[in-house]
Length: 390
Length: 221
Ligand SMILES: Nc1ncnc2c1ncn2[C@@H]1O[C@H](COP(=O)(O)OP(=O)(O)O)[C@@H](O)[C@H]1O
Ligand SMILES: [Mg+2]
Image (tube, rainbow over all chains, first blue to last red; front, side, top):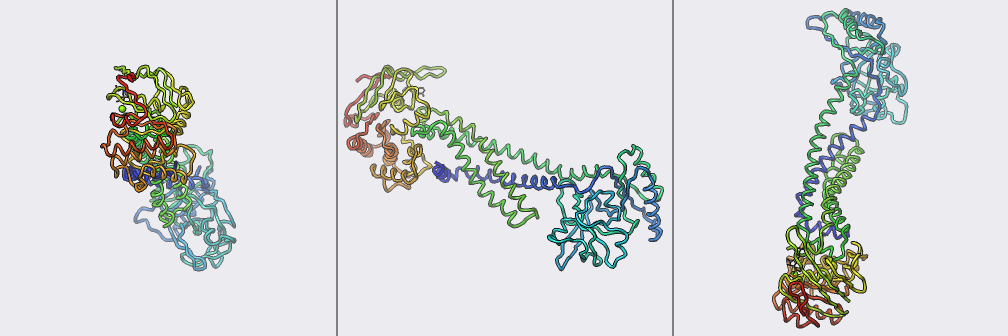
């Protein structure tokens, strides 16, 4: 019977060309949507790697004309650290580069090991970063002041980079060529998903900055019991030390929401557009099937006369539609498969494969739903009446 | 073979009620070639459809090939139509999107059979109607007479005991019509197939064993 239906559909392929095209387009739209959903979902499932509750991000920039020499800057930031630390609510603070968690900034740098080089997110922080962020060390430890005494500067890498360079061995103690010279790895940190819940994990390196250098940003972890006035007191502390600076305090937890929205909002828009498209296609398929059934009453009556049961006719209508969608899916999958094959967009091929499977499943379910009612109508066509008309 | 007792058929729509058949009593013996004549609209097709279990009578009982036809389930009806009866229609009712061979195989799709068996039987049936050289054609590429021969091949491919033919020559010129008639006569003679044929043509009717005339839903002869 299946072969019969294939023959029937194949012979009618010109009539069905538009419907097939419509199915191909909807498959590709679904494929795009599912690719993003699967991609974001797998990213979302991964641990954040740091804490964002009860952490404030304080940025400051000096106003023009307030330049001062390096030593005095050093002193200012030593003082700032002391003043902030002396606040009872504050647990720890850390100077960080502007690509701190949930900021829009990124900073990239190449790093190479034994001639193989890799692009990494390049962070600069001080020794207190792990305590503020509650990061998890996978191996070794965070750098500290003693590491600065050695010939090579210390470096912490994340586990994504570790997997690239040292998949089967320990990274601690290895030296990497990085920026201004050779760096020795003191530890491997669990990768921080610092561009939001839906962001991928990327290779990263953490370079040590001398305590209290000018960094432009501070992360402050504080006691959850801190009262509402804490932020304004913190602001006063900052502006007391950093005169002539513009100071901005943000909550990391809020920055996370904003960051996530940059992914979610376009995604929701895409889902809405995709949803409309799918509803349209579903109505289209339904309409075409409905029309086909009414046009094929004589054929259906004939099949009944030849020994088809009502259920058999309904099954035929549904199966035909499945065969038709299989034609469309074969073509659609051919196009979709180019993404993993040509490695476009740098996504793991598992994401594409999962998206293809989900889209195929979705199309089949959609088509069965659309074909169900026309199929049932066809089953109720009375053979004598259908053969009488024409 | 076919026993109709007090068959009555009333078509009811919202506004009109049509008495298509009234008190038809008819027996067709095994191996008989019966023709039915009557003016248009007198109920010939209705009668044939009832005999073929495509339609139910409003009243009366039918026994065909030793089984009582009422109270059959949808599945049993389908099985019966498939096994026992071959239909031929005035307007052929071929599926235009299928090649001749696939059209002829159609009844075999609704029973257990392999693709090889189907092809074998369909080719044999096409051989019998003299169309072995047209198996790959589409119905639209055939003449009316050829189409009706394909329809006959389709009716006989499942080797039914009974063939019901509704004006099989109605759309054909006399030459093509007598070709078709010859095939039916041969089928009746050689294979003993019981045939009931509706026709408008006295000459055709004369070639059959027995003629039944209908007028306004009633049997007149
Ligand atoms: N499905 C139907 N609904 C209503 N009336 C019908 C239907 N089929 C046939 N009839 C009526 O029943 C009568 C007999 O029709 P039919 O058996 O087709 O006649 P014939 O084949 O002898 O020309 C006609 O009056 C026709 O209009
Ligand atoms: Mg008629």
